[in-house]
Image (cartoon, one colour):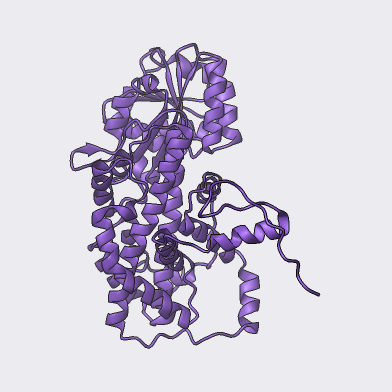
Length: 475
């Protein structure tokens, strides 16, 4: 390919593992791709893959741009934030009107909106794309979530459809909507991911500390669950984790890993924007908070010596406990997904994305981290009722939740009685009960706000805002 200009279908900036794997994925499907990275070692690593004329790489931006077919399409797989800003600034000097920049990283959706506006002034089109599936997904088929200018997407649509994962003959990508729709959907995907991970972690705690399960028993149980209604990528990898031996010593690796969980921020973003939209996502909030709690390792160890509580040993028959816990987890999965899809529904209206939630569920069925058998039913539910506010009101889901809720309540009660923290599991029950409550005690909150701050309140029997001179406290 050297010296043969204007032959590449796509240019990709950022030749780390994700970028290199996505390039090779496209090459496997017959496309010619040029890679660019300032790091000569990354360039050399891609060239070493030996894909001949299908793949080229360069550390010269001008040389890289010269290899691209017009209108040029340049995809970024670099860390979100300042690195994306920097690459876009560099590209603007070499691209022309009508060319396309595609941000495939985990950029905050507000940054995507800003880049769209700024690049429009230069005549350059912009597409924000969420990609889920990790390095293996990038190589063999991720879930791809594009949003932005639809006519610009047509330039790369066929490439993405071939590179994405496929389930039941469907490709796990589709144009999602205008503006920052793609990055917003990916953000909420990650928020749901946080919720599911915390739910699984709490089930592990109940079984390990509460019921005394060994790693071998945990592996067997989660393997069984992964073949059931709880079938999901996260359940599958959980089962695998419990079987992993520690190569640096004896025993299973899981028991040598520190109980502190870090985060990159996408779960927090989901939580923050849900608050701005007044769309309650209690389980995402809980999952983010528990990562913060996990970081207080020194404080927790000191508090354990000072604060007493019930014995964490659960005396329930193990078979009965695991049967209840499995059903509680199915309940939790449904409610957690429902919260995420409700946020997407609200955001689609507020930001005018025009999301088709059945399509979102469809492209999440393969390639992505939260892929789960449940998404087939979610896809069907939104196909039946595209405008429903919550999955909880779908007839099929409402019936199933009715069957499962007693087990979810009992598991939360058992864990609470034995001092095992179940913040996320508790949140799904509270969310369910709050959503099905035609009345909530928020009237008292209104009264309190009016009492101390004259914030006014609304009445049930008359329209308008009201203020009362409340009786003053005596003494």
